[in-house]
Image (cartoon, rainbow, N blue to C red; front, side, top):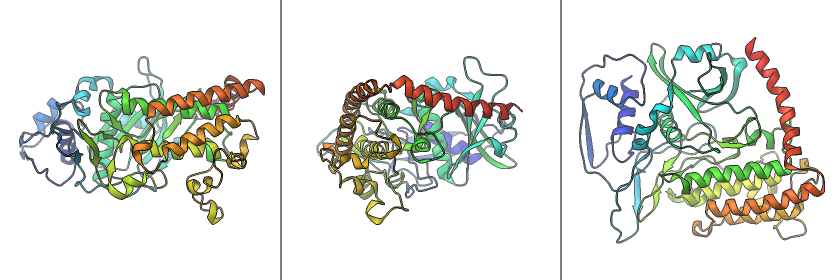
Length: 453
């Protein structure tokens, strides 16, 4: 319990949102008394006062003008590297002065923490039939995700939820859990997945960290693009999904009180609700952006291979333009129906971004890259527009990449093209969505039946 409590206190009390690691900050020293905590095992992240009763913390620190998000490392799977704690520096341009201090994610979180429910482990066990493997809907290096049923249903909330049970082996899992709670406890947008609550327990079986989200019945964009057992997403629906994802990213970069760098944009993190509206998920690697005259945040690279911006991988310099690069990769996945890395293909086609260079957007051969599962039911002009946008996002020079607001505008134009094509071929947005929704509802009804039995 001491580990979890220490992490929570440091993440909330240190200003700015500083490193959550074992290395001391150069300007601060925290002294934690050995006085035991008499509170219950369950840790309430929002209860700062309760934590202060458990630990007497006296700190002397020189407050920095920069405000950075948690120093987070990679999880499992194909994520790259792990941050070593030396990366919590925000670089600033020469001759610049410290800007006026802004609020940080933890400070805003304190105001809004009441919106998250603290679940007991017994509640979540009951919701998942003791984490029954038949209810497991996802798995990765972070842990497992289960479909659950909360009884009784929370007021104005769905009773069917998704419960992420983290593998809490090591410090990185704790860091990402804290980041997920604090970022999603603050951020609010129709295209971000909603965090309903959490559970933190240090008991006889070790540390248990769980997150409870709204349930996304249509899985992820990745599932529909690359899983041949899943119905193909029609052309107009694809553009609608990527447009919604762009609107969510624009909110992170330009629309929220604190600029947020997502750092892990990929098709598997774009979840789909009943109507195939997209919602960004998994904020364990998110960072607060640089402030004032600072141009970037410096940190050891993490993320997923094939999606991370090259300048970030090479230098550790992180900006919102790093997210733009990742967005460009997913744009080409939308067009081609191919993963960024397809190892089973001929060597010239393994790397998606290298392969598509052979078919420029204005060339006669461009249509050869379009996903064959679309069966020619798409707008060529919209596809060319999206490919050109992807090339802009993938520009080697980050400064030449568009902003997310510009991306949204271009995608809206592509949507107009696509809808015009759809109307002429009797394939409207509603038609395509209704066919997909009907197919998914049949599956959901079968799943609901199995959940209730």
